[in-house]
Image 1 (cartoon, rainbow, N blue to C red):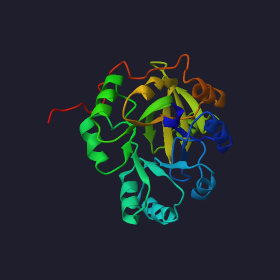
Image 2: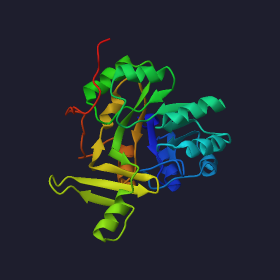
Image 3: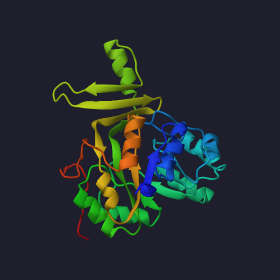
Length: 266
């Protein structure tokens, strides 16, 4: 089923191994337009990568200057299959420039019901469903969606994104050495979070690896997304070669959370 995997490319050296394992869709974090990913790439670097299905990730919130600069940058886009994006401004830029690329809407916590999903599917090619809904809810949305959808299947799930430089602030407040990747522990619950920071903000990931590989068996799947951030290359390759992972966390697949928009009867 690796032909349905979209994988975040942490290092381009790994691409040949991913391809041998059957992966054919690759996601590259665009330099200056991403947060929560350790390695990013310029548009020229992405264009030069010799694979067919290349997707660009733009996942940070944009201000007016960012929008203007992105318009100039994307005018030169070529040999790119699509853009995976969070800020709706990216959608408007692509339409304004008339770019011939797929659009995959990726807002971590908002694609939680079929009604809003189908609203966007009238405008974009696909969405990445929230990582905070149950397997039954995912199946319901897939069965009622107008187009194929993307789902998280493996990796550390993103918990939150802040424009604040949380690790820098923490380092300064407690006079400890700064690390742009760190593990934080909440003092009361002892829950740990994996954090990564750049100049655009901080992303917190869950403590445990999310294992939703069985979701690839569902109908109406465009891609199963594997985020390799914080994962060892050996772990990624073992999953790609066997389709299995012993351990991990099933997140909210079998445990409902109340922090989401429910399905509503029209």
